[in-house]
Amino acid sequence: MTITRERTADPVLRPFATGPVFAVAGAMAAVLLLVNGGYGYFGDELYFLAAGRHLDWGYADQPPGLPLLAHLMDLLAPGSVWALRLPSVLAMVVSVVCTALIARELGGGRRAQVLAAGAFAVSMQFLGSGHYLATSTMDPFLWTVLLWLLTRWLRTRSDDLLLWAGVVTGLALNVKFLVPAFWVVALAFAAWLGPRDLLARPKLWFGAGIALLMAVPTVVWQANNGWPQLEMGEAIGDENPDKLAAALSFPVLALATAGVGVGLVLVLYGLWRLLRTPSLRFLGWTLLVLTVLFAVTGGRFYYVAGLFPLCWAVAAVRLEAGQAQRWWRWMATWPVYALTAVIAVPSTLPVLPASVLDANPGLPRPIFADAERGWPEFTDAVAAVYHSLPPEQRERTAIVTQVYWQASALDHYGPERGLPEPYSGNRGYWTLATPPASADTVLYVGADSPVLRTHFAQVVPVGAVDTKLPSAPMFTQGAPLWLATGPSSPLPELWPAFRDLAL
Image 1 (cartoon, rainbow, N blue to C red):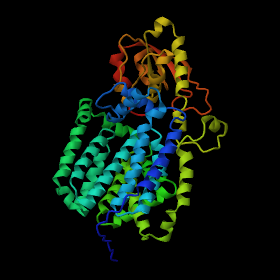
Image 2 (image 1 turned 120 degrees about the vertical axis):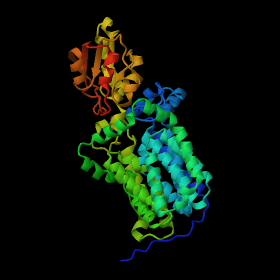
Image 3 (image 1 turned 135 degrees about the vertical axis):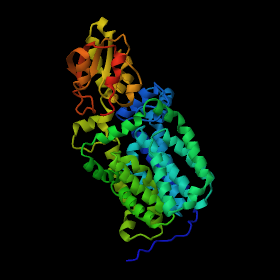
Image 4 (image 1 turned 30 degrees about the horizontal axis):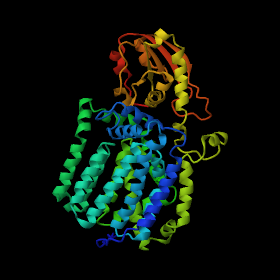
């Protein structure tokens, strides 16, 4: 059987559909802005705020970008959940526009640009990401910008775009260490399948140099601290004991979050068209290989989300040209987009008050709704135990938590409740602060700890957290509290024993 490969002419640049695309981006922004103050901080957002109060060039679990951004937003609007999430909303708006621009670079006209932008706007992954300040928001956003620059280079061969791609890559390296995997795989397939001249462009390598220079501080921090990011990757992989099941579920979860309906179907169709388009085939194979790579190494399913906009754009261009089968074309109708949005919005965003959800357990719940609630109540419970200690003992007591979210909540809400600075050996929080040598007592929040049992003379239970909420967030409701006294060594010397990157 002979397989014929499609050959296409260079796409002609069509006018940008400014009004319709901006309307799609504006609609997504309006939805996000309406709900962004709902419930409260997500656990990772509290951690970014805590890390931002201990600014450094790197952390055990990430580069410095998100803690710095969280710190800046908190300086502008202290204590505002809504304001903290404004960069995420802006990132999603720009991503919608960039997705439309990718379609335009591939020869798409007004309809293709709107179809591609709409697929992004109704995606569960990106609606959910736009609601939080998170690496899973900023990293795919930067990949989307990168893909626009790359597809524009494919059309124009303007090498200055490769320098800007280096700048975007440098920014991405300060958010998450994933983008090198994209470049290694993409360039390997470009060398094999074309465009081979990409690798011969000096400005590609100058751009790589810019990216490396932008990453030097955080790479040096990692080197000086024993490369904890490598251990972090192993810890994430170990969260799923059944490696085979986790690997097999990776593409399923990734596709599901692309958007039940439009997003999922157009990702699959777009990938198919990528693999059959000579100038873009290397990017289609890049998506496939990265999916396998992240799946077998225990990565998160959203690691490949930054490549979805390209698939949506390619699919939209083909749909506009009428070159798709009728079934595919039927997916590109406004009722299907509307149905996708109706499914995606309540599944990812807090559109209903928490009290309504509590009173009606059968209603759809946002995926991470419980992780946005209960942190003040959790802090109240810990504060009650802390203040029940004799004054002279409180002065010598360090509060240590099992999970970094718990310490982050105490760091944010604790000062107004009279709590001292909290500590945790979990993930990146371990490097933020070390208990003082003057402390000889630990109020520990979490499961019975072998570290306490090994290094303290006495460990006694002193209660458990009760947030009194019908649906409490992870790591709060029922969390035991322990009082450990008689340390075998000063706490700074014992602190390495508390280090734990796993959840």
